[in-house]
Image (tube, rainbow, N blue to C red; front, side, top):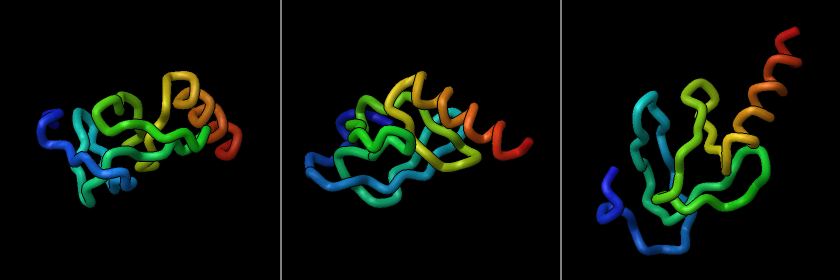
Length: 74
C-alpha cells in the first residue's frame, strides 16, 4: 500500500487484512479499532488480525483482543 494511493475522504474504509499487507475493498481515510473504537488513519494502520479481520489502534489493543480470545476458547 502506497500512501499516495489513499483517498482523502472522511469515510471509513473497508479493508481485507492479509498476513503481510492489506487491501482496500472500499475507499476511506480511516478504520475503527475493534477494541477501543478509536479511528485509525489508514496510512498509520500497523496492527490487525487476519483471522478476525480486525484492526487495532496499537499493540496494547491487539494484545487485549488476543487475551480475550484465549479466554473464550478455554
